Image (cartoon, rainbow, N blue to C red; front, side, top):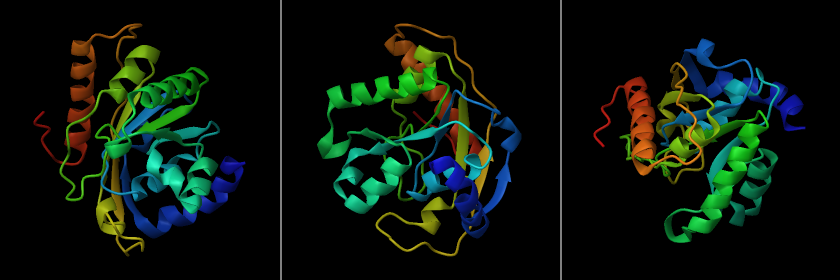
Amino acid sequence: MIYPIGRYLMPPLYKLWLGKVEGMENIPKKGPFIIALNHTSYYETIIMYALLIPKLDVPIHALVNSRYWKNQIFKIIIEWGKAIPVYVGKDHDPRKNERALQKAETFLNQGHIIQIFPEGTRSADGVLKEGKTGVARLALKTGVPVIPIGVMNANKILPKGAIILRPVRATVRIGKPLFFKKQRHPSKKSLTSTTRKVMQEIAALVGQRYPY
């Protein structure tokens, strides 16, 4: 239901707060694939849905902080968006996060799309944080491509702690798909190097250097 409705609701969001978009030709015409992008604001997920839902017929599942399920309004929105909860910060739970990644793998194997923020948390000042290995695990265990995306100015549209959208337009740069050899049991070295490669591509798209 979200996708037919989204085809009509998302374009207005696209026009109001989304400015320049580069590299749309790098988005595959169908799934499965992984969207990996920098994280400075809640608004990045809205931007991705606004860009992709009108163009794709398969579900998009964002990995979202579990604490938003505690707010009934957020819960309705993120469940409507078919999101997957992950447990970070004081709610960190390795077992539940393992199940979240397994669920994401299942969706990818069904031809769906997964959106993930490799940093695992928002950067208030826009400077990239160190990437976590979740994106690498999904890419290596499923063999699906990773689409690196850099979003700029999302933190100015909806800064950390704000609830009102500001009249700023975001810029989105979409990189070429990254392909990694499928590994049933990826080593720590493979997970680390794959994460670094994804983050380096995101950094280049937002004009930063990835120092980790």
